[in-house]
Image (cartoon, rainbow, N blue to C red):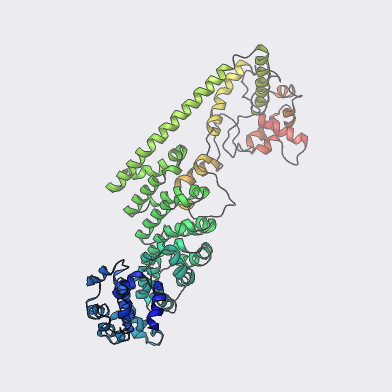
Length: 584
């Protein structure tokens, strides 16, 4: 009676769905003669049902035994008998055949004693485990099995089977839970372990899409990424190099600026000349995918050279990959880049032997055409606006015209003094332009042909728009060595070359051709501009003698500019003698 009284006082502690029928109906008098284990047996039956079938709300659901294992049905029905006296005792549970032979029980016992098992038993057990994981309860796997698997893999036990079981649990866990139980305590050690087999290294790389986003950024950049770079240069397995390239797509967006723009791009530059054609192809594909993660300066010096190199690859898929990468990164190329850098590169593959490569090249050209037409329309619009602005300012006044005429005349005078024109045999060119005037019409006409080669040689071509200029102090990043068009334009704009001068002008080392400054006027003409500062640079001339003429003929026609303006260390007299010789 005392026990029944205590039960009535504490019954509220038990959930309603776990209470037996006699308690729910308030049959307290019958409980005084019932066995003590009756209430506990009913509660245990409810617990077994909840473990296998989930939570329930009413006792009627306990009759649905289809959700329970077949071997558990007899004992389960004994626990939920309507008569309390006929219910099985809870102490009989371990002796029941189902629990003695249950795989789940064996699994628990083996996990508890895993440390004392030999290596063969461990390997055999862990190989069977992946097939059992889906049938095990989620909480049991996460809290019981997973810690054992991680500890075993840390010390090299279980190998591929253990790791596949760990990765297989990820869909059943949240990111935060997987990071706390697996990534933070174990992942960095696994990826930096140099003693792993090739198979385990490849499995770790394949799982990088899971681990990369959960790794701590410092550990990823300082530990995991340097170990990952070893895979780029592994000469024992092309498959490992190829898989490392594919893995970098998941890692690159999380790298710091140095690792991404310097270290990783240097690895890719080397992989573009790998002996394996598939590796070269996948490298090009990877560069295209990582373009949005690169810094703007890295994109500028990497994309075009890398794709240009790939389009010269003898492997057709590599050329097709380069064209596809150009198409996917089209947003990073201006109309100027397309016209000056990309058209010369894509042009040759328009006649590629492979049909797919040609089709990709023509598609790329069609994609660029609207961009170029838009740029052309913009240039026309700017030209029209400039002309309209100039017209709105109105015609110049007389004072403005005189001032402009004086400036042009002064510039023409100084230019003619330095450049000059050739004397006519008749000697009628005695008139010398003053400071404020221009050349006479006869002399101006004679200068036209002499200025033509200078204009064509100097021009207004901007080589920097093509090649970006050569920076001798810049470290070689491995991309520019193979781009012919880049070097060609850069050398064409910077390399000194000697220009022939059949008209008697002076040949210079460079891109400008200047007419002979002594061919226009005589010595008196030079003296008439004595007040002009520029003329002070030119030594005064004496009348040339036959001897000086003879010496002049012996001189080389390729004297440099410095010797003409006045030889260093020479006297004034010697300079004038040489000046007269050059005039002749």
